[in-house]
Image (cartoon, rainbow over all chains, first blue to last red; front, top):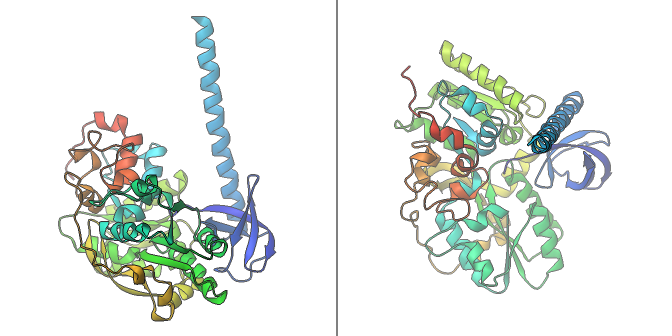
Length: 90
Length: 342
């Protein structure tokens, strides 16, 4: 339950911010963080930003996460092609 | 010991546990909010759910935990209004759109989640929303770690500390564990790379017999934590003794609403006395939470108890040790579980 995900702030409206990550947009409560600006990165847990992220670190993390996703997708795609090949062989 | 359930999940999902077997013995800690929530709390929620005026709002996992008086899921099947949300904010929105009914949010979770609930309460106070209530069941992590350190039956050499709890409380609360109990603490993120690095540091500490407090999640965790969150927590809640499933009563480990906010407390609607109760027969979740036994040592594991039909909370929650062992531990069952001496 203590899952949290880094998201980028794209717009701020009083106590809320619109945040984005990998194409997903969400309205997030930012009451727990002072002086937040558009372009900052935050960790989002259950609809609230719980902490601000160091910008470079955040971008690096997101890049690594995307690499994981690609790798996972790649490996399942490979498995599928392998399976289809083995079916053809038999 | 990895304190957080999400860490246990990562260990299994990325195969770290298997890789490091049998050299490192991982003990799953008490960091799964659903698992440590007591039956008494769920019984209170069930009593509240019986009243037709109330809408019970909760995080999903809690629904399926069974007690002697049934589970919330069974109540929902009978037509009671129980809803699942992603955020306490959704509960507040629900209160705004259902003025005639009482919205009762089942507030469980640790320091990561508690400030969010505190924020919604302050918002309800300022916007004069008077049909939003919470059933406070939030707990604090450092007192639980101290309780585990004082228990002689459990042998812990070091802690992988939960990253997002630490983002709120900072590093300082762990100092006592290092100084007084001589256990290493490494605050850790949730990516496999974070975990491997933290494990390396912790193992180095254990090898050199020099317990320290270290942080490998510096991109999120500041030494002093999130001050704003700490302030709002202190403003809305006070700390008192509270009971945990498995660990029993722990001093100064629970959060309860301060008098100023006591009109948000859902316990005012519970008239009858709720008796303390024990686990269902055959369930050994209490020992699993304490780290005394591994899930596969429970007689009901994979027999009477499975994710489809869970006997105890550790099989219900995605962060529960039993559930994780069930889903990812297949190869693990086949290898020899004995750990080499020294």
